[in-house]
Figure 1 (cartoon, helix red, strand yellow):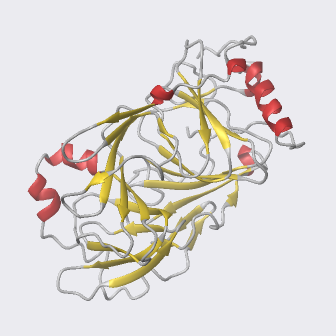
Figure 2 (cartoon, helix red, strand yellow):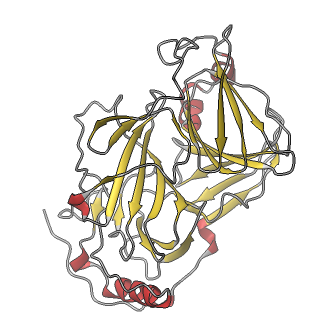
Amino acid sequence: MAEAPAMEPSAAFEQWYVDSSYQRFVKSEEAPMYEGSAIEDLGSIELADWKRRGGKVAYTRMADQEVFNLQIIEIPPGGELRPEHHMYEAFMLVIQGRGISRVWQQGEQPHTVEWQEGSLLGIPLNAWHQEFNSSGQEACRLVMCTNMAQMMNHYHNIDFIFNNPYVFLDRFSTSMDAFYGEQPKHWNIRLFETNFIPDVRQFGVDLWKEKGHQTSISRISMASTSLGLHILDVGEGTYAKAHRHDSGPHVIQVGGTGYEYLYFEGEKEPRRIPLHPYGVIAPKRNEFHQHFNTGTGPMRQVAIRHGPARYGSGGRYDPLGAAQTRDPSATGYTIDYEREDPAIREVYYKELEKAGIDLRLPPVSQGRS
């Protein structure tokens, strides 16, 4: 297989190009829809009244794909959403406020889970759930990370999705007393199973020495879903090598600051997007992307993606998860540090200098083989 040639310095990265077209806003009768490769701040985007459940909502259709999507939900002070159950899987990330969720199967008493900013909750497949805002003064905002788009397209039957009576008692029941209360199970290196994380910003991550001592990751299995999920720390003074893959993964910033480069092969100017809580990056198929940490301490990201940590992948667990760097024509490809445009790191070092950060570490690979 051919190797990619070394790159010469380019002026494109020196321009710190910012393009608002990465985020597109589409009006509809049901709810706002956001498209593109990134949303800078999920906490400030426009929402609309949600006829089906109450509160307010917006949907996403990012990266020109219809497998994963986000529901950005707001519950007014002292308010609540109407209960629902559905034949798609979901994680719930709290980005503002505090409240409770009640989760139950038909005919059973509900489990009650208290949450706050940073909490991450797995919603069992087709179980009933309802969310309440515990504050009388502050609205709360939630992000549901789901495969609703895939299931809607697969069955193209709304009644089947939202009114299916089947009960997955093997996944969730009131008899599972500690479903949301157990300590995470540490199944393997960088592999955990849990149904509730009180604060994802504080969750322990395992050192990823194969990627460099400045990177740590934990892959999470939640509520027996077929959704992939990981928590990644990019260390201070470093950045991710440019990498690309198929569309679908959504990377939500939950801690730290930095910026993202997005570009396709052959583009003269990269798009630069600020990274801060709670922005999301969802690159399109074969769209190169890089995460740059410009703050002190690690920059933390939560990703929903293909490939569950424990269930349904059909392959053996690979704790390394290294990206290939030899075949530039492949969809999954990482540009080696030695072959990247030198202007990329020159700009990055200037950013560190402006922030008063002296640490300079080699870049890390974030992709999977």
